[in-house]
Image (cartoon, rainbow, N blue to C red; front, side):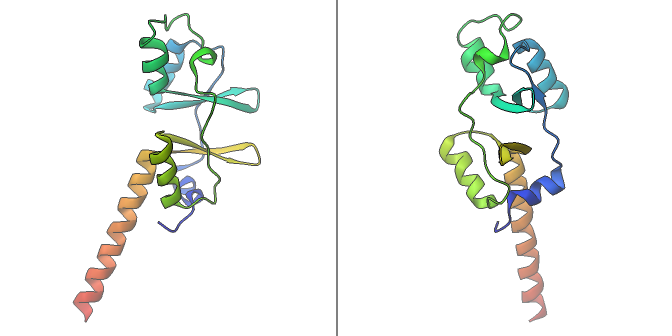
Amino acid sequence: MDIAVAKILETKGSEVEVTTPETTVVAAVEQMNRRNIGALVVVDGERSIGIFTERDVLTRVVGKGRDPGRTPVGEVMTRQVVSIEPDMLVRDAMCVITEKRCRHLPVMSDGRLLGMISSGDLTRWTVRDQQRTIEELVDYVQRS
């Protein structure tokens, strides 16, 4: 876990699904469902201005009785986006997700969106790292 999240992006890829603030919630949810993802970065031109997540749909659309076919993403997106730098360690990113209670972390550098890391990505990486450690220890013990 002493590895930077940039390594996860190298493996996972840096493609990030985006939407615009004018997109309806229905269209954004359809996009998320097609891609089997839980969040979209909301952009205005080249600039990231928010994130739209499954939680936003539940709390700000369904929970408020809003019409998802008429509600633009820009009205219900999360504006205070928690993001991380590519050199942040995996264990520190896991702490951010736990403390901030978010499931998706845009990876940013100098205001540029480099990719997106999810809690699932971090968990998967951690499990793989621990499995490698276990295998190395078993190998070491068996050779001794």
